[in-house]
Image (cartoon, rainbow, N blue to C red; front, top):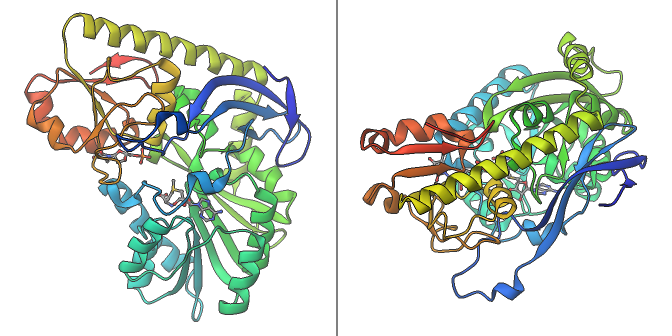
Length: 409
Ligand code: SAM
Ligand code: TMP
């Protein structure tokens, strides 16, 4: 285990606290005839900065390997998330986008799930999205998209073409981007002095509390807290002025940054920073304990799946999430334990899961002949999925969950 390496935010030493070993790219679903020898692996390990407290990956995967024409994740796949983003769009329209001819930019707009609601209201907008396939889906919905990675130079080009923005928004995207100084310099260039940068990402406080270790994979480079975001903002001429806890994706925080000195921070910021301090969230001891809990889940889950296999029970995976790559590869779960995973995403169907090569099938494979058990990899969409799959329960089917611990429902 490497002892420390320089922080990507402040260059102080980062202490590694958990090593997931060799892991594949979480969204690289293989064609059945692909040469497995060509599969890309990297060392997935995570550490905490002893100065700014940012939790981050040890190794960076080149961005073009993850975000490209065939990036398979479509944000609109969940009806609950569609409502979430429509609600956010409505709120921005009535609070931050009330000036004459407002302009909003979204980083990582994906298939346009949020910006469609902005476009429908005739508000000037731009999505910046490097993954060509999903960007095309957004454009087909009437969303204005620029196919590129956002970084400092992109911001300058957008200002030259469109002027400065009232709102820059990013959901489940900022934590994907290691080159943060370029991003935040770009944000400062693009944002009006009165503007805000709003972003929401998985919250380290929820990850530690629920041992949701599967939030850790190639694309999730940073694991934010109010404290670490405050430090990151300050180093880049910005200020954390609001935080809001969200229940989506297993627990997130929506952060609002403004140019330094422009807005008074809400009481919620100091409260959350104080709570993190009380919980010793960034302490190595806390994070090593989290690691112990991960080992326990790994042991319990593999034991349960082996027992069910030996008893002749059938088990299917539900939701070929990016998160599931961490679970299957850490626990050594292959087709012998979980013969297939069902998923609604056409781009994943007919392919093999990264690393352990479990076939991904359309949801009909699940409903056509219910298994005895379903391992819910998409646990963050549990409510939506369990409601939809009530017939599976009625037929005697049981759900296996592994967050916050291994249990059967
Ligand atoms: N915002 C959507 C949501 O919350 O469902 C999509 C999230 S998806 C997990 C992350 C998105 O970030 C991908 O569509 C990816 O192509 C995009 N992305 C990655 N790096 C980026 C960058 N530097 N600038 C803009 N988008 C980026
Ligand atoms: P996410 O947890 O990163 O949002 O990924 C969810 C995955 O689960 C995505 O591949 C779509 C899939 N999914 C289903 O198969 N059925 C569903 O009902 C939902 C909500 C998601």
